Image 1 (cartoon, one colour):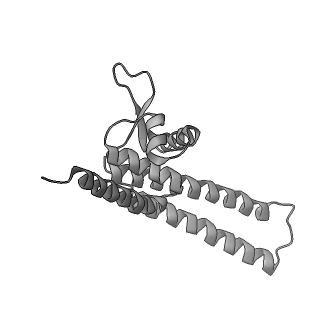
Image 2 (cartoon, helix red, strand yellow):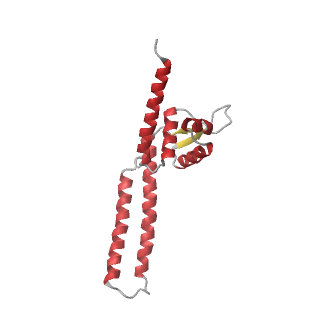
Image 3 (tube, rainbow, N blue to C red):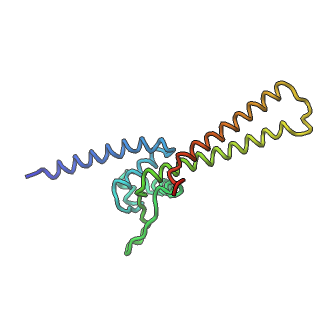
Length: 169
């Protein structure tokens, strides 16, 4: 007769290892360790969970789970679900891992690159103002460097647009 307790222990250990290892990958997508573990737990669980259930599964406070879920909701990595007869909020991991993570990551990079490019362009305009009459070598070098930095952000945007998993949809 198979040892059910031993099987449960093995499954728990494998689940713990999977959560730990996949969390490391998700941290590369700018999730903090707590958010990554929460997402992986929801994904492995495969069914909606309440904040209380998440708190118990991860041995973290309900407040911590609420903060993590809000962050994951903002990134469109989890969704709030409704289940008849359940009065507490339920949350489930988005199942389309690659597209959701890549989209979230790409859009954050595109947004950041665009904001930084605009800021550099505004800075560059300061050197072109009429009241800045003196055209020194230092000013010209600074203009060239700013142009290079602006071009760098354009190239970053182009690269991330090219890898956007939703661009052909």
